[in-house]
Each structure stands twice: as structure tokens, then as C-alpha cells.
Length: 298
Image (cartoon, rainbow, N blue to C red; front, side, top):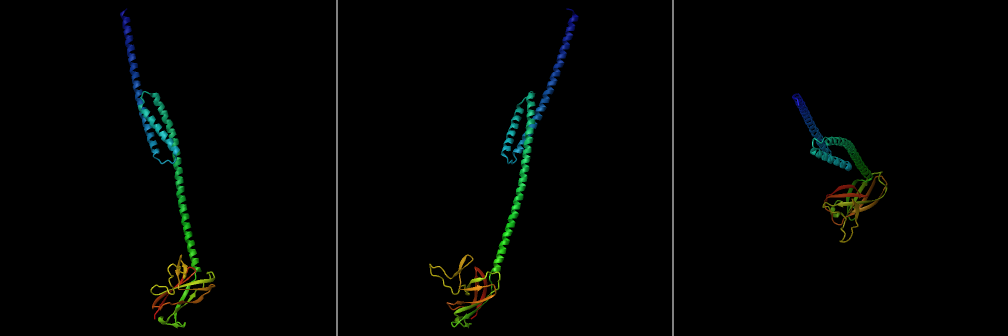
């Protein structure tokens, strides 16, 4: 073979080797660039998944008053965690799977947006209902206060009407009588007390027969003309006052027609009375209608 042919073949081989080397280097550079790009994409995709996982954690901490929505959020949160773990284990050269995981991320994002809208709508509804409940409670409180005020006013009006309809003893005088029914100033000679009283005019009081009860208390607080019943016996000389039965010294019936009325009653004395201040109380229809201090000097 001629030397020229050999040289030509050698040159061609050198050129081919150089070309193959250049191509290999180019492909290697391209592959490195592709791998670096895939690493960047994987890293960015991993960060996005981690951010999404954090967002799901935030929504799980919310007090969502909807069990179905809460379950859906929990499932999607677990799905993100599983995909994130798979992405961490996926090699950068698995471009196809990384692309799929990227699509999965977009899908999860859309699902999450829908859940966010539902949560926001639910929170807005809860806020509105809470506001309405607060307003309702405030209105109920105002109604209750108004009712209480009305009840108080009605009670006051009832008490006013009741007081207005009550009889009132406006004056009282007491004189001592001896055994001849003559007035005496000597307490030692007195056998009974004559009690003169005046009942004021009251056109609001219901007319008719009334029972008047008089209690005369001596200076020591004992009730005159009253004897305690024997043991086992029920007291008979009593009347009803403030849910109790209390004893009286003397009682008397009178007819009342609304005009001023004067009357007299007598209280027998079983023992010699003492000097000092006595109290005469008048009761009618369950009410105390007059109270007067009386002094006996001799």
C-alpha cells in the first residue's frame, strides 16, 4: 500500500476520533446541564410541596366546624406528605416521574384552593352566625330587662293600688274606765280601756263589712287581754297577718262605705296595768292600718 493512502487513512481516523471526542464532550456537557436543571427543578418542586404541607398544617389547626371538610383536608394533607416523601426518594434522572409529580402538585393546589374557598365561606358563615347570636343575645337581654322593668312596674303599681285601697286609722285615743264604766286617771282603778279611733275616707276601698283587730302591748311587750291556750289546744284568738296567725286583744266588726268613720272598742284588763308607754296597733284585711303610742302616767 502506498504511503499516501496510509497517511490519508490516519488523517481520517484522527479527524473521526476528534469528532467523536467533541461529540462525546458535548453530550456529556449537555447531560450535566440537564442533570443540574433537573436537580434545580426537583429542589424547587420539593420546596413547593413543603410549603403546601405547611399550609395544610395551618388549616388543620383551624377550628373547622365541619367534619366532612375536616376529613377531606386530612386526606389531602396526607397525600401531600406521601408525594413529598416520594419526591425526596426520586432520582433526578427520573424526569418523567418528576414531571408527573409536578402535575400532581398542580392538581393538589387546585383542590386546596377549593377547600380554602369552602373554609373561608364556612368561617364567614360562622362569623355571621356568631354576630347574629350576639345580637340575638343582646336583644334577648334587652327584652328580659324590659320585662323585668315591666314586672317591677306592675308590682309597684299593684302595691300602689293595694296601698291606695287600704284603710287607714288616722287617730286614736285611749281612756281608762273603772268598774262603773266611768273614766278614771288612776291605773289602779282601771278595769278596761276605751279605745276611740277614726278611719279615714277612702273611696277606692271596697265597701262592706270589715273585721278590725286591735293589739294592745304593755310596756314589757305583753299583749293585753290575751291568754295562752292550754297545751295541746289550738289558739282561737288569732287572725291572719303576713302568712302567720297572730293573737289580738280585741276584735270588732264595722260596715265601711268609703266615708270617714269613727268607732270605739273596749279592751278588758285582767290585771292592774302599769305606768308607761303602750302601743295600740290596728289591723284590717291582712294589713297594719295604724299604730299609736299611748302613755299611762298614773
